Image 1 (spheres, rainbow, N blue to C red):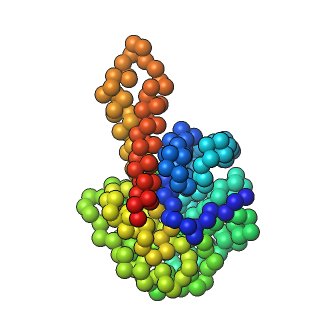
Image 2: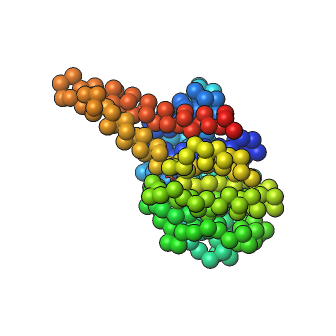
Image 3: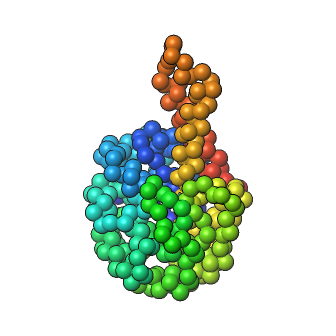
Length: 274
Ligand code: 13P
C-alpha cells in the first residue's frame, strides 16, 4: 500500500458518499493534475458498499492516472476505524476532541497502534471544530489552546492533526475569524502536518493563505460538494431535464457530475496560484 505523502503541496480532501460523487472528484483531479483525498463521513461509511468503493477508487485512479486516497472522516469509536483499516482505507480520523485531553491522547494512541506499519495514516483533532458534519456536532466549539496541542503532540505519534482555528463545518452565517497565528506558532515546534476543517465558504484568498500557512497540508471540503450536487439538480430542472416525456436519467446524472467536477476543479486550480 502507498502512503499519502503529506510532505508535498497541501491536499484538498473532498467528502463523497457514492461512487458517482467519487468519480466527479477524481475527474477534477485528472483535469488539474492534483492528487485528492476522498473522505467518507461516518454516515456515508456506514451505508456504502465499502469494497466496491475501494475497488472503484483504485481501479479508476489507475485507468485515469489520478492519485486519489480514501479517508474516514470524524470517527468517534474504535469499531468503524477497525473496519476502515480492514477495507483498505488509506487514512482514518479518530476524533476524540469532545473528550478530556488525556482521554483524547489515549484513544488516538490506540488508533495509531492499529494503523502504524500498515501504510495507513491517522488524523486526530484538538479543540472542537464548530458546526455539524453529517450528524457529528461539536458541543463546545472554539479555538484550540497552544499548550493542549503541544501536549497532545508530545504524547502521541499521530500523522496529521486537525486544530480548531476558528473554522466551522457547514455554511457560515458570517465571515469567520481565523487564527492563523495559532498555526504559525504551532508549526515551527512540530513537523506534524496540520488539517483545516470547514473549508466550505472560505474565500479563494483565504484558502490560498491557508495553503501556505505553516504546516497545513490538508483542507477539508464537504458542504460545497453537497451544494454542487444540489445545484446540479436545480440546473437540470431549469434545463427541462425532468420533463416526463423523453426523460433521460443520464442527462441529469451528467449535470450533477459536471457541477461537482467544476467546483472541485476550481478549488484544485487554487493550488496552482500560491
Ligand atoms: P465543510 O462542510 O464546511 O466544508 O467542512 C468539511 C469538513 O471539515 C469535513 O470534516
